[in-house]
Image (cartoon, rainbow, N blue to C red; front, side):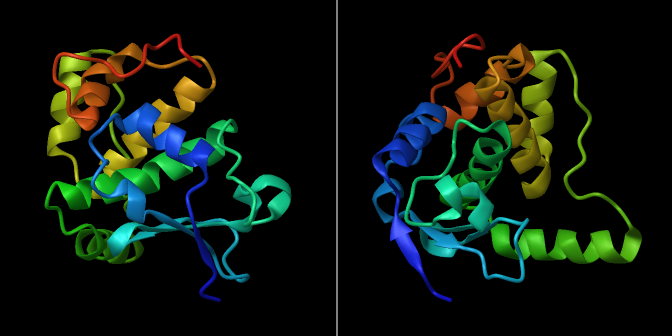
Length: 177
């Protein structure tokens, strides 16, 4: 039930690739947990660097093996949960904000992950900066999944620079798989 492990070297490489040095202070404490048996499809990010992933995200379904990060869905979901850790480093109250968004989603039937895609990098960055935590997570998930497919959307370049903590530097190019 409380099984967890530190990140593998390939998982650390993934964090460095998509977050550059912006997560360095948290990276040594990041831990992967496996979701309980009854919840096989949702990931979860909690305070203190704890990320719970569904068993199907691990190699051969074995949580002792690395996450299947070359799979765009798995890599995107892991990136989404990592972004929540990054948001906490920026001072956001992610758990509280996300819980409120999920409650509103149930009551008002609104998708807390929905955002308006656009083709302009400056507009996408502005949208990211003003988005709530789940919208930011979904934007980052979509971008990383595109990178893993070899089809990174250039509209996310400003967002990638912002998340990496380097306003004038893109940590990876849209053509890098």
